[in-house]
Length: 99
Image (cartoon, rainbow, N blue to C red):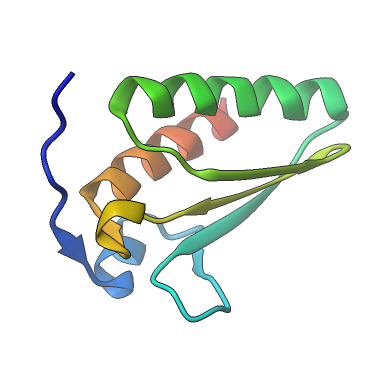
């Protein structure tokens, strides 16, 4: 597969589309969101859905899981910032969480 080079977006532009996400507290252009589930199995199932979609679109988030909590950080590593890929994956993640 050939993927297009992403165009850099500001954190503000991205957060307009992903209202439940927030800026990370570090020096990079990235956004993050924590998700809570009933148990580990539900949390891990969610991570699996996200990972499969990420692989499909060629964009790989930072995924952290502790028991029933999942922390996801989105950034486009090849441009060292945020892009439409983050918006696309973030919307997918939000949609899966709300199901």
